[in-house]
Image 1 (spheres, rainbow, N blue to C red):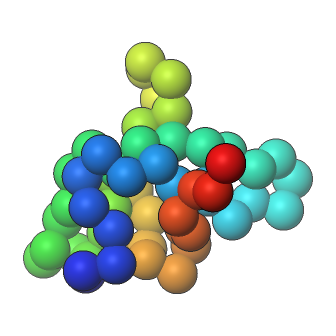
Image 2: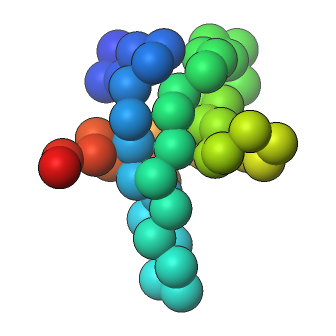
Image 3: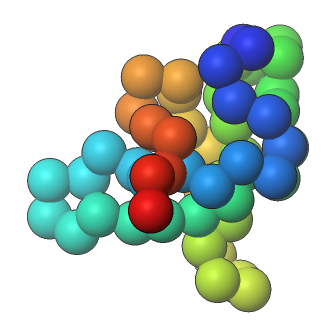
Length: 55
């Protein structure tokens, strides 16, 4: 769970539509990252489901 930090911009590995969001919480117990998209949508992802966003 050291791969991403709060505030990191990440992309979600989605085959249909790539999403860019921000890591806002790390759930160590469930081994999930909470990623927020825009102002109102957020979801939990496993480490292997997201990658660091490169501009």
